[in-house]
Image 1: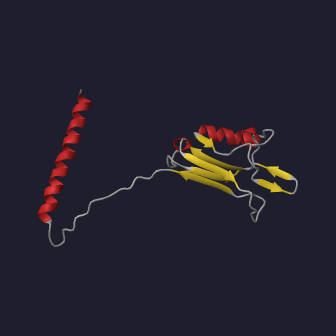
Image 2: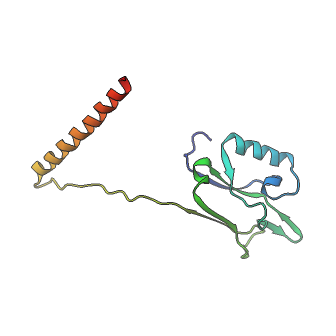
Image 3: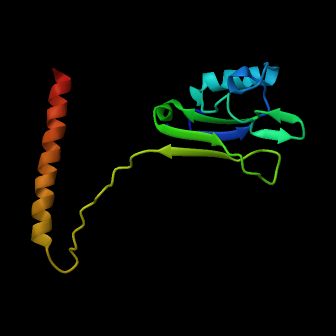
Amino acid sequence: MSSLPEEIIIGVDLNGHNTLWGYRSNDNRGKDILVFILANNLNIINKPDGLPPFQRNNSVGWPDLTLCSQSLIDSSINWEILEEISLIDHRYIETIITSTVANQFDKRYKTRHRNHLKFLNILGKEIYHQERKIKTGQKLRRT
């Protein structure tokens, strides 16, 4: 798990019983799943008081878990089990993550036929500023 990205959401059907995600009791598999979740700093997004994601005849269960990394737990995550009918005995789970994505703008210079001097002038100034930042950082580390 340490090779996974910092921000991750995992949706999985684990079939482990644990009171943390809706069951009335714990089984060995549910305990093992909880150990895995805790060992990997994951968070359970499921709402244990919500609709059960599994329903067949008179049987209901909470085998489906949605987990996220610690870095996402403070995000605006809306997790819901939908009431609409699916083609299997599991209900649809909707997970919406609201985040702000900053726009990134990159400057481009067309230098194929002209503007070489303008480009070199701007590039030279940028290199100078970056060098000063590096030198300032090195001075700070020495003190």
